[in-house]
Image 1 (cartoon, helix red, strand yellow):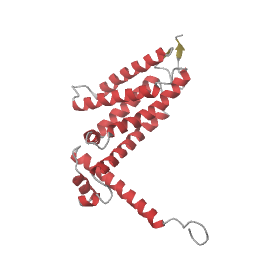
Image 2 (cartoon, rainbow, N blue to C red):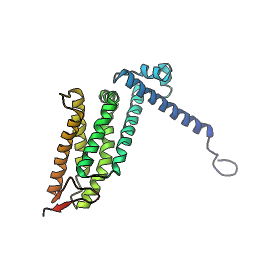
Image 3 (tube, rainbow, N blue to C red):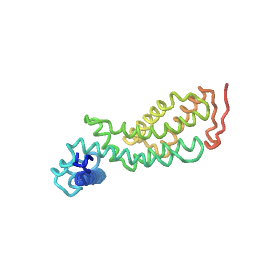
Image 4 (cartoon, helix red, strand yellow):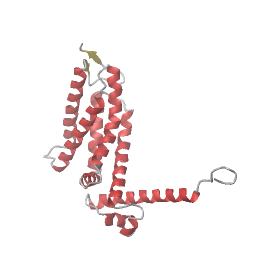
Length: 229
């Protein structure tokens, strides 16, 4: 406390240092993305440091260890894919179109950032956390909100919506990951259509179990559905 009885003003230098440190961390994450794009999922901390134009030892002035840097890269990946899915939250269209769009967005992101995705998979098994699970959680969280809303509109059981979405996202992610490794002459569009049909079949079954038959080709802004009981 000061003589006036008021607490001392905040230390501006500490705030500036914290801001500079965070900016520097983000610069290393940017360098990490560049290194992964160049060297692939096996990109090392030394290669990331080289992409940042510094010696490896400089990295550890801003990260406690390699795992800390890897976690920061994983968080950036989750933010990137969240930004890709954000437009879907307000997108218009039919149920079938929105399912295809969501799946297509996921496949497109994984293909465009293949090395980064494989980097996440590679390091998820090293003990510092499941980065792929973090990405799936981001996707599922956004889709679950929308599904919950429409289940309410239809008067269907809303208790299992979030659980179902997480399961579907896991199915899509696992199928896409396998396709990346073993495409078996299956094109990207064919994969998207296959997954879209499968996801709609699950959603249709969920709605019918709740007594709702939804026309997948009607706009969700004015859904065409009927009650089965």
